[in-house]
Image (cartoon, rainbow, N blue to C red; front, side, top):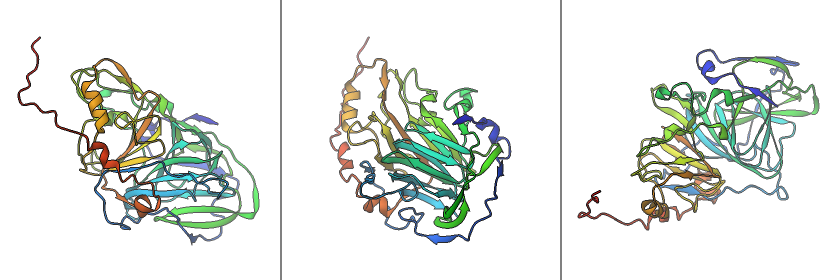
Length: 402
């Protein structure tokens, strides 16, 4: 099914391209025509901006007994910023579907898709071969690559789309040669092809400048007999992430949990980072161990693949999401604060059986009308999880003498 991906470090130092040996060239198709986009959009001005802390309950997956919905029909844009025409921006989508794509495929001319399955495995057929991607794995389909998605039941997941940059491994700096997501653990497909005529027509769906277009051809686009190069789709299992964490006191920045990054032209500033919060040891002394309360210059969109996120064990559910926008304060809920303020500081496993993630961006993202209204999953009581917080300040307190 998969072979080892060429190291991402090598890709960063050279031209990214691939040479595909096709039975028929992809130029053999009828003209593209505009088709409805559904809930896929890059209109960031549909509704007024909302600086509040936002949280969504698990997004509804359509029942196969009620309506057949495939991957493309099940794409819904939650938030984003920027512009596909100027090749600078980001969009965050959720996919909810129950049917495989039959005699149709999708390609994104605008940017890269980083796909995070949450419920149900997906089998992705690409021009380079096939990849099965399960929850707790991710895959990246880079700009322009055609792919089709097979599902095996009611399926849900998240997508981070970036325009104008490709995902790569973060710079490790003082960490050195090894750590975080290691290049050896990324996999790409081996060549697979079908020499198949489609008399009824094969549909190519093209996302171009934020719109969807479709064309017809009479053969399968997955007719690549062999390929070579370093511009490929790839997948990664999150269990292979080599966690680095504080072993003395205080907090390290969550950037130490970065799996992939899409850089801007400004050093140290990302269009988007893909960050995970995997199972790990917590051993910091004299420290409030959960994430601290903060405001920052990044937008933070979080999702939960499975388990219970340690900073909000109630309310933040698998298949749901949250968005904390630029300079919007956020942090652990009141229950988490009280429990961890009084807990004995001893070595303990954190996030066991859990995988939460974050799409973090330097863009100030706007939420779509679907995200705020149409999906009907916005948790309007979210702010109440901080209401019980109270002051523990005592101006007369002094540390005990030992």
